[in-house]
Length: 327
Image 1 (cartoon, rainbow, N blue to C red):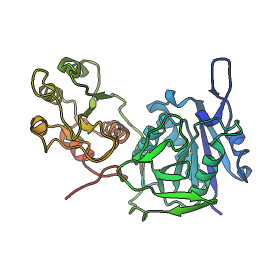
Image 2 (cartoon, rainbow, N blue to C red):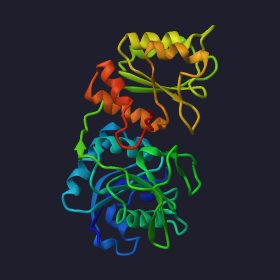
Image 3 (cartoon, rainbow, N blue to C red):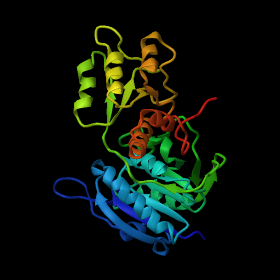
Image 4 (cartoon, rainbow, N blue to C red):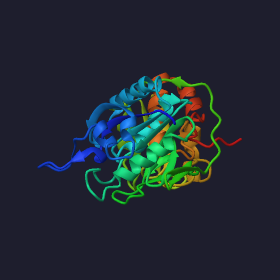
Protein backbone atom coordinates (compact mmCIF):
# COMPACT_ATOMS: atom_id res chain seq x y z
CA UNK A 1 0.00 0.00 0.00
CA UNK A 2 1.21 3.49 -0.87
CA UNK A 3 2.96 5.36 1.93
CA UNK A 4 1.26 8.72 2.44
CA UNK A 5 2.13 11.90 4.31
CA UNK A 6 -0.22 14.61 5.62
CA UNK A 7 0.81 18.28 5.67
CA UNK A 8 -1.55 20.36 7.81
CA UNK A 9 -1.90 24.11 7.27
CA UNK A 10 -5.04 24.93 9.25
CA UNK A 11 -8.32 25.95 7.63
CA UNK A 12 -11.91 25.23 8.63
CA UNK A 13 -11.28 21.51 8.79
CA UNK A 14 -8.94 22.13 11.76
CA UNK A 15 -11.05 24.80 13.45
CA UNK A 16 -12.24 24.93 17.04
CA UNK A 17 -14.78 27.35 18.54
CA UNK A 18 -13.46 30.47 20.28
CA UNK A 19 -15.07 33.58 21.73
CA UNK A 20 -14.31 35.45 18.50
CA UNK A 21 -15.42 32.70 16.13
CA UNK A 22 -13.85 29.63 14.57
CA UNK A 23 -10.06 29.43 14.68
CA UNK A 24 -7.70 26.64 13.51
CA UNK A 25 -6.68 24.56 16.51
CA UNK A 26 -6.21 20.93 15.48
CA UNK A 27 -2.89 19.54 14.30
CA UNK A 28 -2.10 16.90 11.72
CA UNK A 29 -2.22 13.98 14.17
CA UNK A 30 -5.57 15.20 15.48
CA UNK A 31 -7.01 15.23 11.97
CA UNK A 32 -5.67 11.77 11.16
CA UNK A 33 -7.48 10.46 14.21
CA UNK A 34 -10.78 11.08 12.44
CA UNK A 35 -10.13 8.68 9.52
CA UNK A 36 -9.55 4.90 9.40
CA UNK A 37 -5.89 3.88 9.70
CA UNK A 38 -4.84 7.51 9.95
CA UNK A 39 -2.17 6.53 12.46
CA UNK A 40 -0.30 4.78 9.64
CA UNK A 41 0.44 8.07 7.88
CA UNK A 42 3.35 10.38 8.51
CA UNK A 43 2.48 14.00 9.16
CA UNK A 44 3.80 17.54 9.34
CA UNK A 45 2.29 20.56 11.10
CA UNK A 46 3.45 23.30 8.74
CA UNK A 47 1.32 26.12 10.16
CA UNK A 48 -2.19 26.67 11.51
CA UNK A 49 -3.87 29.46 9.59
CA UNK A 50 -7.20 30.60 8.27
CA UNK A 51 -6.72 30.36 4.53
CA UNK A 52 -7.73 34.00 4.13
CA UNK A 53 -4.26 34.68 5.53
CA UNK A 54 -2.44 32.37 3.09
CA UNK A 55 -0.06 34.45 0.97
CA UNK A 56 2.86 33.86 -1.42
CA UNK A 57 5.26 33.25 1.46
CA UNK A 58 3.09 30.34 2.64
CA UNK A 59 2.99 28.90 -0.89
CA UNK A 60 6.77 28.78 -0.85
CA UNK A 61 6.75 27.04 2.52
CA UNK A 62 4.24 24.47 1.26
CA UNK A 63 6.26 23.72 -1.86
CA UNK A 64 9.39 23.18 0.25
CA UNK A 65 7.46 20.96 2.68
CA UNK A 66 6.23 18.86 -0.24
CA UNK A 67 9.81 18.50 -1.51
CA UNK A 68 10.95 17.33 1.91
CA UNK A 69 8.11 14.81 2.32
CA UNK A 70 8.51 13.57 -1.27
CA UNK A 71 11.79 11.92 -0.28
CA UNK A 72 10.08 9.33 1.92
CA UNK A 73 6.48 8.87 0.70
CA UNK A 74 4.40 7.91 -2.33
CA UNK A 75 1.76 10.60 -2.02
CA UNK A 76 0.93 13.74 -0.06
CA UNK A 77 -2.33 15.16 1.30
CA UNK A 78 -2.48 18.83 2.29
CA UNK A 79 -5.29 20.06 4.52
CA UNK A 80 -6.10 23.68 3.73
CA UNK A 81 -8.85 26.25 4.15
CA UNK A 82 -11.28 26.45 1.26
CA UNK A 83 -11.24 30.19 0.60
CA UNK A 84 -7.81 30.33 -1.07
CA UNK A 85 -7.34 26.64 -1.81
CA UNK A 86 -7.74 27.13 -5.57
CA UNK A 87 -4.97 29.76 -5.57
CA UNK A 88 -2.69 27.46 -3.58
CA UNK A 89 -3.40 24.45 -5.79
CA UNK A 90 -2.71 26.50 -8.91
CA UNK A 91 0.54 27.91 -7.58
CA UNK A 92 1.80 24.52 -6.41
CA UNK A 93 0.99 23.17 -9.89
CA UNK A 94 3.46 25.68 -11.35
CA UNK A 95 6.07 25.44 -8.59
CA UNK A 96 6.11 21.62 -8.62
CA UNK A 97 5.77 20.84 -12.33
CA UNK A 98 5.57 17.18 -13.28
CA UNK A 99 5.97 16.06 -9.68
CA UNK A 100 6.12 12.28 -9.72
CA UNK A 101 3.78 11.70 -6.77
CA UNK A 102 0.22 12.95 -6.21
CA UNK A 103 -0.25 16.04 -4.04
CA UNK A 104 -3.91 16.26 -3.03
CA UNK A 105 -5.37 19.31 -1.30
CA UNK A 106 -8.57 19.05 0.69
CA UNK A 107 -10.47 20.79 3.46
CA UNK A 108 -14.04 21.21 4.59
CA UNK A 109 -16.91 23.62 4.92
CA UNK A 110 -17.47 22.65 8.55
CA UNK A 111 -14.92 21.84 11.29
CA UNK A 112 -14.05 18.16 11.54
CA UNK A 113 -14.94 18.19 15.25
CA UNK A 114 -18.61 18.70 14.35
CA UNK A 115 -20.63 15.48 14.07
CA UNK A 116 -22.10 16.66 10.75
CA UNK A 117 -18.79 17.83 9.31
CA UNK A 118 -17.83 17.08 5.73
CA UNK A 119 -14.22 17.06 6.90
CA UNK A 120 -14.09 13.35 7.67
CA UNK A 121 -15.30 12.22 4.25
CA UNK A 122 -13.20 14.82 2.42
CA UNK A 123 -10.02 13.79 4.22
CA UNK A 124 -10.76 10.11 3.75
CA UNK A 125 -11.49 10.64 0.05
CA UNK A 126 -8.31 12.66 -0.41
CA UNK A 127 -6.30 9.83 1.13
CA UNK A 128 -8.06 7.31 -1.12
CA UNK A 129 -7.34 9.44 -4.19
CA UNK A 130 -3.70 9.95 -3.20
CA UNK A 131 -3.19 6.17 -3.20
CA UNK A 132 -4.29 5.89 -6.85
CA UNK A 133 -3.64 9.16 -8.68
CA UNK A 134 -0.63 9.69 -10.95
CA UNK A 135 1.80 12.47 -10.13
CA UNK A 136 0.43 16.00 -10.09
CA UNK A 137 -1.37 18.54 -7.92
CA UNK A 138 -5.07 18.00 -7.28
CA UNK A 139 -8.03 19.08 -5.17
CA UNK A 140 -10.32 16.42 -3.71
CA UNK A 141 -13.55 17.80 -2.32
CA UNK A 142 -16.81 15.98 -1.77
CA UNK A 143 -16.75 13.03 -4.14
CA UNK A 144 -14.89 14.92 -6.89
CA UNK A 145 -11.20 15.03 -7.77
CA UNK A 146 -9.93 17.76 -10.09
CA UNK A 147 -6.67 19.20 -11.34
CA UNK A 148 -5.40 21.87 -9.00
CA UNK A 149 -4.85 24.41 -11.76
CA UNK A 150 -8.45 24.04 -12.97
CA UNK A 151 -10.32 24.17 -9.67
CA UNK A 152 -12.41 27.13 -8.49
CA UNK A 153 -14.43 27.57 -5.32
CA UNK A 154 -17.93 28.35 -6.57
CA UNK A 155 -20.03 28.03 -3.39
CA UNK A 156 -19.56 29.54 0.05
CA UNK A 157 -21.27 26.94 2.24
CA UNK A 158 -22.46 24.01 0.11
CA UNK A 159 -20.56 20.75 0.43
CA UNK A 160 -19.84 20.58 -3.32
CA UNK A 161 -17.88 23.82 -3.03
CA UNK A 162 -15.41 23.33 -5.91
CA UNK A 163 -15.79 22.85 -9.64
CA UNK A 164 -13.36 21.95 -12.39
CA UNK A 165 -13.46 24.78 -14.94
CA UNK A 166 -12.94 24.16 -18.65
CA UNK A 167 -11.45 20.73 -17.96
CA UNK A 168 -12.95 17.31 -17.13
CA UNK A 169 -12.92 16.04 -13.57
CA UNK A 170 -9.92 13.79 -13.05
CA UNK A 171 -11.90 11.29 -11.05
CA UNK A 172 -14.34 10.55 -8.26
CA UNK A 173 -14.32 8.58 -5.03
CA UNK A 174 -17.18 6.17 -4.36
CA UNK A 175 -17.41 3.40 -1.79
CA UNK A 176 -13.82 4.10 -0.71
CA UNK A 177 -12.53 3.52 -4.24
CA UNK A 178 -11.00 5.99 -6.65
CA UNK A 179 -12.61 6.00 -10.09
CA UNK A 180 -10.50 7.53 -12.85
CA UNK A 181 -12.47 9.66 -15.34
CA UNK A 182 -9.65 10.92 -17.59
CA UNK A 183 -6.47 9.62 -19.14
CA UNK A 184 -3.33 10.69 -17.24
CA UNK A 185 -1.52 13.70 -18.70
CA UNK A 186 1.84 13.10 -20.32
CA UNK A 187 4.48 13.93 -17.74
CA UNK A 188 7.80 15.59 -18.43
CA UNK A 189 10.80 15.87 -16.17
CA UNK A 190 10.12 17.13 -12.65
CA UNK A 191 11.20 20.70 -12.01
CA UNK A 192 10.81 22.89 -8.97
CA UNK A 193 10.91 26.69 -9.06
CA UNK A 194 9.64 28.51 -5.98
CA UNK A 195 10.86 32.06 -6.68
CA UNK A 196 7.76 34.11 -7.43
CA UNK A 197 6.88 37.81 -7.70
CA UNK A 198 3.80 38.69 -5.64
CA UNK A 199 3.59 42.13 -7.28
CA UNK A 200 0.51 41.23 -9.33
CA UNK A 201 -2.90 42.91 -9.25
CA UNK A 202 -6.29 41.52 -10.25
CA UNK A 203 -8.77 44.11 -11.55
CA UNK A 204 -12.39 43.34 -12.34
CA UNK A 205 -13.87 45.88 -14.73
CA UNK A 206 -17.31 47.33 -14.11
CA UNK A 207 -19.24 49.69 -16.39
CA UNK A 208 -17.70 53.09 -15.72
CA UNK A 209 -14.30 51.96 -14.38
CA UNK A 210 -12.00 54.97 -14.54
CA UNK A 211 -9.02 54.67 -16.89
CA UNK A 212 -7.01 56.56 -14.26
CA UNK A 213 -7.66 53.70 -11.85
CA UNK A 214 -6.15 51.26 -14.32
CA UNK A 215 -3.17 53.52 -14.97
CA UNK A 216 -2.57 53.92 -11.22
CA UNK A 217 -1.21 50.36 -11.14
CA UNK A 218 2.04 51.74 -12.53
CA UNK A 219 2.56 53.81 -9.40
CA UNK A 220 1.88 51.03 -6.91
CA UNK A 221 5.09 49.07 -7.33
CA UNK A 222 3.28 46.29 -9.20
CA UNK A 223 4.91 44.30 -11.98
CA UNK A 224 1.90 42.69 -13.67
CA UNK A 225 -1.88 42.86 -13.84
CA UNK A 226 -4.69 40.45 -14.65
CA UNK A 227 -7.81 42.20 -15.93
CA UNK A 228 -11.18 40.47 -15.76
CA UNK A 229 -12.90 42.02 -18.77
CA UNK A 230 -16.49 41.68 -19.99
CA UNK A 231 -17.52 38.47 -21.80
CA UNK A 232 -14.97 37.37 -24.37
CA UNK A 233 -12.68 40.23 -23.37
CA UNK A 234 -14.58 43.45 -23.94
CA UNK A 235 -13.51 46.80 -22.48
CA UNK A 236 -14.70 50.41 -22.83
CA UNK A 237 -13.19 52.08 -25.88
CA UNK A 238 -14.94 55.46 -25.79
CA UNK A 239 -15.64 58.10 -23.12
CA UNK A 240 -13.56 56.00 -20.72
CA UNK A 241 -10.94 54.30 -22.86
CA UNK A 242 -9.67 51.21 -21.06
CA UNK A 243 -7.71 50.05 -24.09
CA UNK A 244 -5.59 53.19 -24.10
CA UNK A 245 -4.93 52.89 -20.36
CA UNK A 246 -3.87 49.26 -20.64
CA UNK A 247 -1.61 50.19 -23.55
CA UNK A 248 0.10 52.75 -21.28
CA UNK A 249 0.76 50.07 -18.68
CA UNK A 250 2.32 47.78 -21.27
CA UNK A 251 4.51 50.62 -22.56
CA UNK A 252 5.80 51.00 -18.99
CA UNK A 253 6.82 47.34 -18.93
CA UNK A 254 3.82 46.01 -16.99
CA UNK A 255 2.33 42.92 -18.66
CA UNK A 256 -1.47 42.85 -18.88
CA UNK A 257 -3.28 39.50 -18.93
CA UNK A 258 -6.82 39.67 -20.28
CA UNK A 259 -9.23 37.23 -18.61
CA UNK A 260 -13.01 36.99 -18.60
CA UNK A 261 -15.51 37.57 -15.84
CA UNK A 262 -17.33 34.52 -17.18
CA UNK A 263 -16.45 31.34 -15.34
CA UNK A 264 -16.57 29.03 -18.33
CA UNK A 265 -14.98 29.05 -21.79
CA UNK A 266 -12.11 31.10 -23.14
CA UNK A 267 -11.49 34.84 -23.42
CA UNK A 268 -10.05 36.44 -26.53
CA UNK A 269 -9.65 40.03 -27.77
CA UNK A 270 -10.00 38.92 -31.40
CA UNK A 271 -13.78 38.78 -31.88
CA UNK A 272 -15.24 42.22 -31.18
CA UNK A 273 -14.21 45.65 -32.39
CA UNK A 274 -14.11 47.04 -28.83
CA UNK A 275 -11.24 44.68 -28.00
CA UNK A 276 -9.34 44.72 -31.28
CA UNK A 277 -6.90 47.41 -30.21
CA UNK A 278 -5.94 45.37 -27.14
CA UNK A 279 -4.17 42.77 -29.26
CA UNK A 280 -2.26 45.48 -31.10
CA UNK A 281 -1.33 47.06 -27.76
CA UNK A 282 0.25 43.81 -26.59
CA UNK A 283 -2.32 42.45 -24.14
CA UNK A 284 -1.85 38.72 -23.43
CA UNK A 285 -5.00 36.57 -23.49
CA UNK A 286 -5.61 34.25 -20.53
CA UNK A 287 -7.37 31.85 -22.88
CA UNK A 288 -9.43 29.38 -20.89
CA UNK A 289 -7.38 29.66 -17.68
CA UNK A 290 -9.17 30.24 -14.41
CA UNK A 291 -8.55 33.60 -12.80
CA UNK A 292 -6.69 31.80 -10.01
CA UNK A 293 -4.41 30.11 -12.53
CA UNK A 294 -3.82 33.34 -14.48
CA UNK A 295 -2.86 35.25 -11.32
CA UNK A 296 -0.55 32.60 -9.89
CA UNK A 297 1.01 31.80 -13.25
CA UNK A 298 1.85 35.47 -13.80
CA UNK A 299 3.48 35.64 -10.35
CA UNK A 300 5.48 32.51 -11.20
CA UNK A 301 6.46 33.78 -14.66
CA UNK A 302 7.56 37.13 -13.23
CA UNK A 303 9.75 35.17 -10.83
CA UNK A 304 11.60 33.94 -13.91
CA UNK A 305 11.77 37.05 -16.08
CA UNK A 306 10.75 40.66 -16.64
CA UNK A 307 11.29 40.50 -20.40
CA UNK A 308 7.94 41.21 -22.05
CA UNK A 309 8.34 38.81 -24.96
CA UNK A 310 9.49 36.01 -22.67
CA UNK A 311 6.52 36.70 -20.38
CA UNK A 312 4.21 36.42 -23.39
CA UNK A 313 5.81 33.16 -24.47
CA UNK A 314 5.56 31.64 -21.02
CA UNK A 315 1.98 32.80 -20.38
CA UNK A 316 0.92 31.23 -23.68
CA UNK A 317 2.62 27.92 -22.89
CA UNK A 318 0.83 25.04 -21.17
CA UNK A 319 2.87 23.87 -18.17
CA UNK A 320 0.50 21.72 -16.14
CA UNK A 321 -2.81 21.57 -18.01
CA UNK A 322 -3.83 25.10 -17.02
CA UNK A 323 -4.48 26.36 -20.57
CA UNK A 324 -5.72 24.82 -23.80
CA UNK A 325 -3.27 25.39 -26.63
CA UNK A 326 -4.82 25.63 -30.08
CA UNK A 327 -2.88 25.25 -33.32
